[in-house]
Image (cartoon, helix red, strand yellow):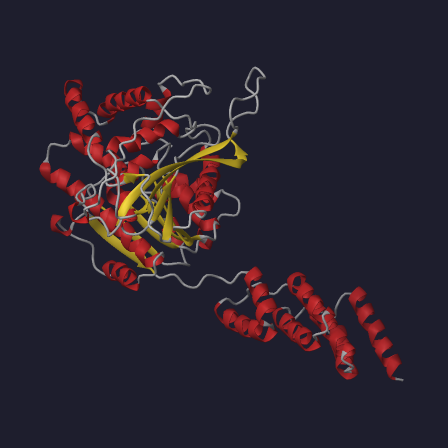
Length: 552
């Protein structure tokens, strides 16, 4: 996937630094955490001048291994055993609501320093972090298209920005919660630092955000684009499972965000993981035609099967420079509410607020800076409103989103960056056969028959009732001695499969066991009248003869 900018800049910068031997232990960079009372009235605002929520924000980094997957060979090219774990490393950056009494806040540079430990968890020395920072300060001015004579000044601005105070506090004590969980996948080869400010904002409003790097299957960079979708979806699955172990995380309320390529793999994650309630994409690859072909080729995936609440934030198609837009995913959605918000006057990369914060250092037009900062605040508001509606069950937040979608898009600068809002009300998702069988087992045949009749009116021709599925339920019930319920199951079975002799054979067996010989004979006679294959007809005749012989 060609990118408008190199979202892997951090990776390139780190890869240029010679690694230290795995056996060498170096001290961590100095911890700036110093206890002090929190003065909530004097809290800083969150870049770009956004009002924080009622909570302080903590930040911590988890170093985990997914032992169900490997990341490097068991032996190297020369046949020597690999040093250290070969399992897939997953570094999880976590923002969370923190207790009111907090230590000193982090600096912006602290977020970028975490890129040093995304695949090996050896603590970097202060010297190595200095080298990393200098690499970034040299690469970014080139990426920002600054002419050579102006790069020194931009490097100074980047250094000043790195020293700015973040809102989060490293390793602060978490609030009790539990709080809804949001898991994030960055853009192509990207890192969580690209969205740190958005996550501070969400955490201050009562969410736990867990972000993982966007990595390939066997390398830090994406090494197989088609395979990366499943790889990254599984990384998000792992993050949810790990975060569910914390008592202050409510894993019954899970959302996901994804930027660019991450707004593609997180859709696959959301489509197939039942724990997910809400999916948000930030100019995601799910809106790009060539990338859509990749996810459509994933076995078992279907746009139509996606049944989670969804919000799509994107560059308006008329201004899309990075990729043309293809909205067929959004158009295909039927189940779960779907929101689309299109923005004007912005580029693809500017949906990454952390990157935009630094790239804005090149801007000289105050109005342009103000417009981009307002765009970031609008993204924050959209994300908060969406998750409040679908993770916290805030009806007012949902109503505001729907009401705004009913208004025409803005026509002038005074209307802000949003040019279009769309809303599609989701209809109830299809009933799965396994769910129907569970209803039959737990609530009985009468309730299952009522639900089947109602469902068949809106979903004619459904396949909820299959002989291979209903038959075993009947057998278990019959063998338990509950003949009345067994007969009711047979009647439901026959309703769904009127041309199948199976339910009639089973009904005849129930009637015979209950001593209702005439009813059993009638069932076998109906089977013969159906014109069934000779083998089944012969069975029916034999049983008829047996019953009639007993009556004599």
